Length: 119
Length: 217
Image (cartoon, helix red, strand yellow):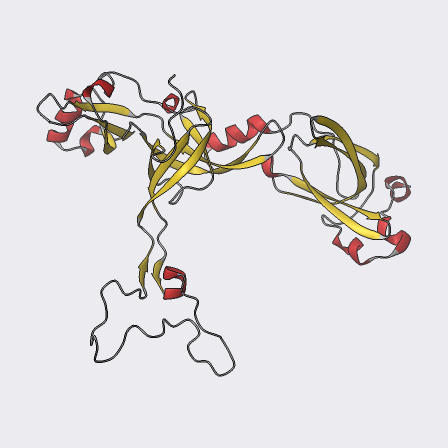
C-alpha cells in the first residue's frame, strides 16, 4: 500500500482505544442520531471476532436478545462507536468464537473467566 | 473546456464524515504537475490551451528535441504530457503558475479519464453483458452468443456485431465524481467512488462537464 494512503488512514484512526480482546464481554456505546438529537445507545455482548487492520479494523459483538441471537459488526475507528467498555474479560483459545452460534441457553453466552483459568 | 490535472491512481480507502458515515474514496496523486507551454489563440498556435506535464523523467531518457522543449517552458522533464484547452486567451494561467491539488476544492464535481484494467480475451457474457442461455435441461448453449444474423438476406454479418474478443484497456471517462478532500500539502486528491484502471495508472482529473462549476474562488 502506498505510503500516502497509510498516512491518510493513520490520521483518521482513533488514538486511544480501550484494550479488549475476543471473548471479552463488552458494552459498545454507539452514537445514534435521531432528528437533530444525538444520544448514546449501548450494545452489550461478547466480542466473537476482530478483523482487519488500521482504519479497516472491525469487531463483531454477539448477544442474545429475547431468545434470538443478534450479531453486530462495528468498524473500530468509526465516529459512531463512542466508547468500548469491557465488563468482563474472558479467556478463550480461539480467534473467532463462531462456535457460540450453535449453542443454546446459558452456554451461548458463556466464555470462561480469566480468573478461573489462571487459578 | 477547463484546466485539469494529470495524476496517478494510488488506491482506495475510506473517509469518515462528521456524521460518522464512511465514504469510499480513490486517492489520486497529482503532485508535480507543471505547465510546459502556454498556447494562445492570438499567437502562433491559433488556439488557447496549456500543455501540462506529470511525473519526473530522468534527463537522459528524454530525446534532445523534447528536452529543449521542456527547457524552453522552464519545466523539468516529464513522463506524461497532456493539453487542456480553454475557450479564450483570457482564461489562460501565467506560464509560471503553480498547478497542484488546490485547483480543485472539496465538494467540487469532477470527471476522471483513465484506462480500464485489461480483461484479456472475453466471451460475450462478460464483454457485452449478454444474458447467455440455461446451463442445464438439455441446453448446449450456456455462454455462447447465439445467432449473429439472418440467412440469404442480408447474407452478411452486420458491422459492429457484438462478439467475443479483447476486453478492457480502453479509455473511459467516469463523470460526476465528487472531490471529498483536496490536499495540496500531500499532493493528493480524494475522489468519491471508483475510477478506471489499476493502481499506478495515469488518469486525468478535470472539472465535471455536466455539473456547474463551483462559485469563483
